[in-house]
Length: 190
Image (cartoon, rainbow, N blue to C red; front, side, top):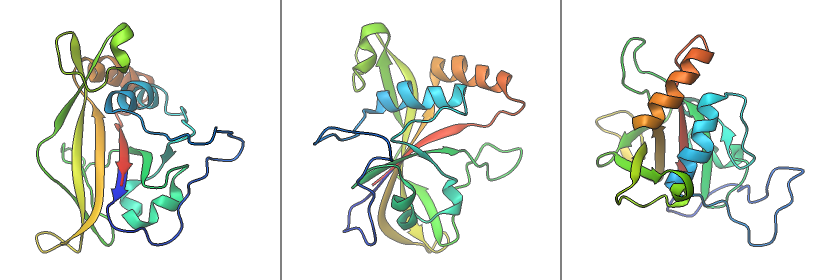
């Protein structure tokens, strides 16, 4: 998940990397959509103990967006997290995206994230021949209050999930390894 805020940030930012990590001046963690899915989300789905230094793990429903920057491992304007998908109803497919202060609302339609195999794997934004569907990207905006009368804020989240052959290959393998079929999401806030 990626979270961004378009208005000036209130409170403290964590622009420092986690302790014991040395990064050269000018380093920015700015992966492409395909890299987020292929190199991070797939590994987390297959191995829930997988930890990426730049990506923290949070329960999205327990934090308001303005509290997330202090939970992030790094980032000044974008923050990346893993989060387990929380279903709105035990037997349903809808995702619960409510917090105490508001809710995340989808904007527009989900977008394909495509990547090629082999040497093409870093060509994340390519939708040409030879690329396959690896995941989906959903854009959401945070609203204060309760639907349908919530007040729109400037907090934006990109939610990534496995899709296509990637979901079939890695999602089913993860379900066999664990006794439950929990689904991890990659979140980016800004």
